[in-house]
Image (cartoon, rainbow, N blue to C red; front, top):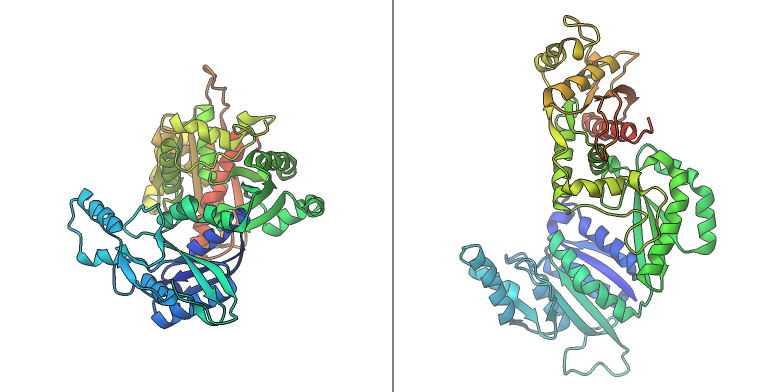
Length: 494
């Protein structure tokens, strides 16, 4: 079965919104074993939407249309679909009542134009999941290539080949679209395609190596997998989120597919070593917070170039972990999967243990002014600066970053301090420290063992690295690099 995606919305063409929906749907179709050969973006124009639908139905067995289901005049997906099908739109009173109830639950009057969302083409049916006011639609269509739809009750042209097509229409709001895809569309497509095998996937998230470098490291293993064809590996460069290595396996059932993935992960992780920091939806912050929780440590940060990025990412990650909403949980030893040799030090395992932990992230200080930075470095006396009360190292240096990390630990009352500084002004760059030089530092206070929590030795460490790009990239990559340095130190790999 060939499936096609049509994304509707002028804002997609203008670049006002990046079409992440289509890429996500394409990935899910692949994982479900459904072929997807085309993706189209089209603006809110009747003729162009009509032409896109007809072209898609001519060449694909199934079409997923995303967007254009809102209540306003430019939301015309329903109307165009009905026209292409050669049928009328009729009010579905059950949908109308559901929309009224949504507004009533928010103590808000329902504008009459919201009833447009309850109009359904004759022959189509609503998708059961409806998290928002826009219902999804599933429309089977009898189609003659190059001619059009055969309306209900009509006869096709003599000698015409009638093709069974289906159109799924889902909202452009990502969480609404995903609920409908997962709840109805993917399963219905698999049923229509006769897909009996189960396809599962796990992502190993890495930091510290390029995509080409990873491919070279794993070239031998990739050659071996090319011979067997199952499982398969794929690489996805994701900016400051690292390079993702995706393992995909097909099995007669989910357990068989996961068994293949577990076995492959056990082969890959020794080859990748320290580069792997998390799995699936877990990120660097979750890996760091999980390790801090495992060791019974708290963290404070001090930032200059990063302007609060680390504090924001850590705060968001901790909130998600405490709520249990953003953990990938993709690790060896998951229930029903093969067991691992050392699950205790697995970052995903540590992240999971942090869900019920006390608050691990103490807070952060954004020191953008020289006055505040100097205060932080002076105020801790010799505890902060190894040069004594009256002297402090230059901020843009490894010694300055170390002093700032100690200040972050002392000022926030945390047991670990993390700091980032950088040469962010081209005018202050030198041949020794050119623009883009970043200084990362960690300061860990000593901790005696207690209960199940191991002892921790006092340790300060700093790195000097060169980063490419403009100031925004310098800030982003400094933040993630500093968090990675802390991860390596907490796991004893530095």
